[in-house]
Length: 207
Image 1 (tube, rainbow, N blue to C red):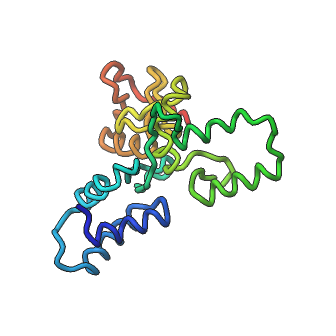
Image 2 (cartoon, one colour; image 1 turned 90 degrees about the vertical axis):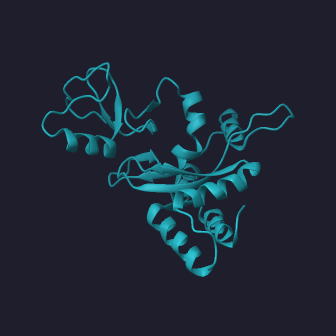
């Protein structure tokens, strides 16, 4: 059952939507200092308690990694719920906008993408190229796997969705940049594909 510390933390998530690991640890520490006399919990158990309480509302705090820099983030996401009562999940409803006859103008599109970036759904690199942010990967994970099954791959190490990363030139296994960095730092000069069915020498980086 949630206590005041859990509610204090949940309020931050409901306000911001997504927080990086440092912010979450700071809020976690503040909740313990502010609400004395509460049960001692580690961060993992603390988040689990919140998730158990918000599950009836189809909400969950999920942890993910930003693909380009390997930074950990926590995001309050809405789970997709399929029912037979005539209702549709919010993400499925968003998908229906593809059927609109009226096309989006250039100015409207720019405003739209600016809002997506501001709300941390997408991320722009220094060259202006756009990629999905960790918030999108967490909240849209099920949708992306179902709709783009032929294009979306999972990281060969952490098994999370991997859109940006290194690809094995022999078998096609894909790795997040940070996962690849951690793996190859342990392997040294003898860099090999982590897939047990491949184990080929790791070739050139393919993004």
